Image: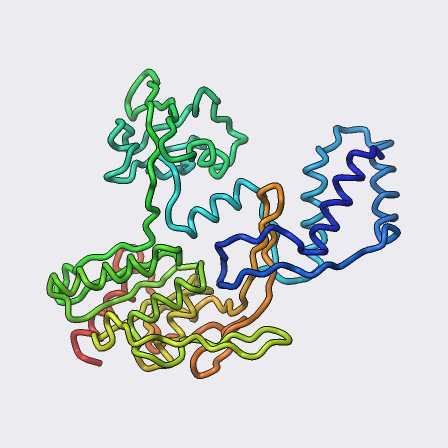
Length: 398
């Protein structure tokens, strides 16, 4: 086995085991404290069997050998799977950068969503009011190249999005095929500071006294977005609110606490337990935007993690009814995110949290106060039975 691969693997594995990584300032899946790991030294002989096995592979394998980086990543993933914890994971650099930007709530980019169609091509959807729309990108544009680099079938959506993103103020050239066009065109766009909204809100057409807030994830901007939505809806006449957390898979712990704080006037939001440390309680402040307005929270099996913090606190504190088609996902563990030297990261389960009434969420989830059966007939007709039931509750003062 080459000295180069041996050195790379040794360094990568020792760094992982030591967890002496560069720690990020943004924490996914619910954690807020910066930490550095202690040093855990492994003797070289602990890896002798690995070197022996890989040496035989390198010597005799008939096919093409993977790169040293690919072997390193595979070795880390293999070690992580031994922990039998679905939330302790290794994330490669491109995915980690996109994760970080999503949780920050802002990124340098053009302001367009990037998806792969059923036909397998990369399609753009400009976000209104952003550089892509202003430069002439149309909904349904097929992306063929970025700065001359052709988009291939092997590229993931994340990889393509990574090519489009960049520093604010820099230019990127997108080669696109407009819908119905025969020839492609080059569109030059100056990247801007793009807000990645986590909130959509409106007055309901069925009853304009009810404000509807959909929160899709918990980013660094979510608390401000929710506050602005509440104030805007109240200004426009809403005196009741629906907070939709369906399919919200979580995000930043601090964002979840701050969002909950908009609806509670003091008292506990959640408890956090860490091995070897005193229990920590997260309390609401008295600076509450909507302490009394009638509130219903929508949940489903995709409501997880930080979203369960919000739902659990509002349920336990009798601040809102949970209305949903199923119990929530049941992720009550908290991860530290360590950024590694090449831009990848390792997420490590470090603690668990409990609701104000000390209900355990992990692997159990939250039971809706009002369970709504979703019928096939409702699905076929595009009828949102959960939302309709929430409207009835608010209108009837249940």
